[in-house]
Length: 154
View 1: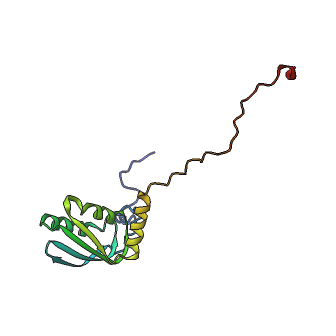
View 2 (view 1 turned 45 degrees about the horizontal axis):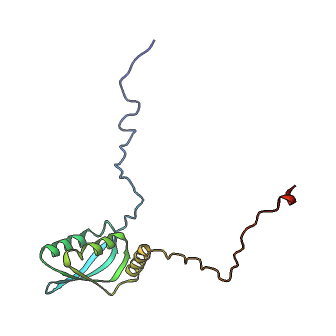
View 3 (view 1 turned 60 degrees about the horizontal axis):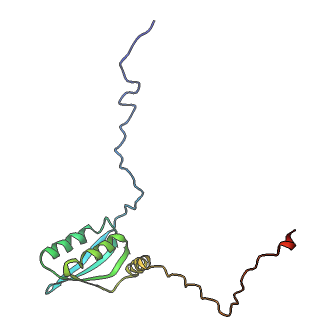
């Protein structure tokens, strides 16, 4: 004799609901990021003091500030990075974006992290040195090649 049942094997009381999980990309999720320590203006120049870490994701507040400043007509930018502890290509992208359309950029008090990034970027863009061409040898005597005599081969 067989009976059919539609009841679940595990009831709700025995199987607790799993909490929702987010995908972990392996990136450091520790609090940090870039902090705009202070911002001042000198005529058409914006002076910004940064502290913290600048990467692709944490650079959004700085990008937003600079985009707004460019829209408001600021043409100069001085970045004080003495308190920046980490910087990557996200910061390089900002440094490359600002000078467009005739705007000027100056870095003041660069931290070790910023200097390390700038040196690495400069080294990556340098052309490798070509090896020198071989120097022609002098005092070579050119002798015509003579075929071996047929009598010696035979």
